[in-house]
Length: 353
Image (cartoon, rainbow, N blue to C red; front, side):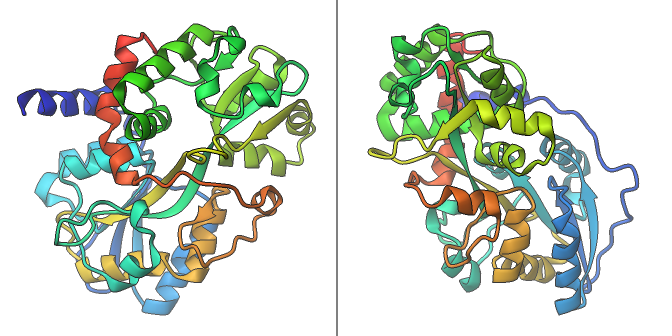
């Protein structure tokens, strides 16, 4: 048990914390007609999202925006005195980290339990789920059309095949997006096979891991990399861009939904939760239920070129509609978050930096 706790703390510290809160953070308050929102989201469509909630309910939203790490650092600093009602974070690894640090509280909501798929919310041990995913994204493989054959890279597993030696690029293995992918592999195939895969990917790298997902796409287009991993919304942004330099990148690459004849493409979420010490709990639950409504799902997902979590809601995003449907991995997002402990240990053993 002690070693597990040490592992959790090691994972928490490994992310690092850079405080970058919005400079003009509003004064927060405790009132039935107020909602204090801590959000890692900062998209144009969010203004309409929040305005519509206030219009429907009369509840004013006080908002603090920052990256995920800065928000969690603020919650640590505030402790029991925090006035946060709702916390919005991105990726299973971050949601799980906040859950095990005790920043959320379980809630019971028939609306959310009905609308949000079970694998897109935290485990319910009798008191309700602690967090809910409200939009989803896929971990896509992009490749250089001139130098790589589709049949050599159409599964995550093939990235470790010697045929791709000197071609693979990724961001840092310790980044939440990579930890979540490897956590999903651990859930599907166990430690031994996952470690063998990670070792093979390291052996196939074109360069040391660096940069973000957009940098991986650019590396593939330039020829520095033959194949890389990216979250789908980074690719969608480039596809939707009208900048000539972005369209030049798109003209040189292609992409594939991995593992279509086996486990399906790895999925992840952006999600939200009621804060542990929420002073306006009823308003917080109402807000999360609002996020599961058809209109809010459109705003929430389209803001970052993601898919709505509520399956009955259809996207109007042209890039996503162009892609059509594909087989998705059906693994609990909660399990993926938990498995990041094992994922990080595997990465350390194979020197995947």
